[in-house]
Image (cartoon, rainbow over all chains, first blue to last red):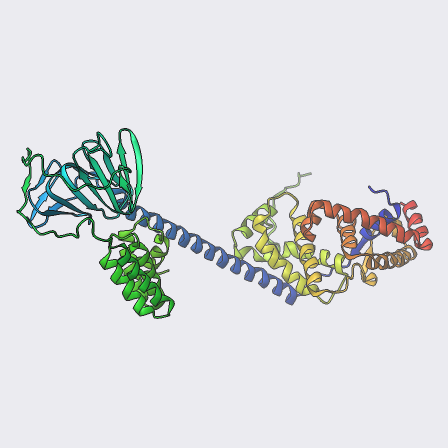
Length: 344
Length: 213
């Protein structure tokens, strides 16, 4: 057993000791039985609570999953595979679908897309609508085009092709012009000027990423648009004949960017928030969202407004959260927005 | 002579309640069946009483409280009993755990085996009154040595060598690793041996008692 014989002997002696246990009195027995019953009842309640808790948790998980699926459906439906993007030509009331051909005979024409994107085609100019689905692809045949592209949803693309280049937008404004060949870039007729954001120009198998203020080809300054080389309306449909000398509906491409104006508006809202004027900050962030819905700061403004409302006006915060989720289903504040919608 | 006529007679003593075997009792308790409360109490109570008395002595002032605590703890833990030991062993282990925690929580003075007058001594070697009285004296001296030892070592020694818990069970009761329980056991045995060795009269008596076996 062990190597300590005296300890072993002591243990043996202790084991011989038999405590004189008397049966419990009736009262003691009754108390003991009641203790067991009470413990069993408590155990039942504990298990019930656990079952309810597990069921509630499972229900919550199921609700989140179902809600996530329901919410994901429209998200997954975006970008739409069908040509859900519709282009309207200002002043004509006409809409243009894929395969359409737009000719600007004089002045400047504006094409508004249902996504919020604005295209300004300088006359004389020709633009083909190649595709208006998940990928919005246009082909500039002649003239100059300014594109103010709304924020693209995941999977969406916006591309303008020319005879010798392809310009892909990463969400902003740029101007693309077709010129006659000149010395600065022999063999290249496309000229691109980025006004805001980032675009990628692909030409001759090379990608060139341009930022605000950049021009392409790098060696060339933007040339003035050339007179139209062809005023023919291409087949098949639809052909839009634009009104003559239509006044410009957009600022000229060379006008100052509205970025500074956006920055100022956003900064004023932030300033109001920092100064503790919450209601003013909420108003300013809201005004920003309405005025610059396609701005890179629009989502941030929406988040700021939602958070401020959450602290002061829960019902409006819930509305703001719903609006945010609809507009930015994969936005950075989607979790917080979802909690506000769920009332958590 | 006529052959005796025999007939089977069923006992109908109403005082004899049907006995529930351990497996059924555990199953009913695991299902929180209140109807099993009486049977469970009557099955567990003697083991609980015995374990508490062995650890704290007979008639300890906290005895009833500890019985209640042990019963409650048993109800909440019986669902985890997997039959790895006997039901009696399981009850003893849970009770020892409750007692150990109770002592630590209340910082009670350790009173292992300190009620010599209220114990019986069993064994053929101790059958005469003189021998029994002598054995009680020896027990009192052994207890005194145990009480002077470091608590954890004394507890581990008693739980293992006297009450028969294995090291894994002691580790659970005292909430230490099995290795730590083993270290405490070895050190406890060594210390008790050395203490008794320094008490020549006790050492001699124990040696003599061992020789009588």
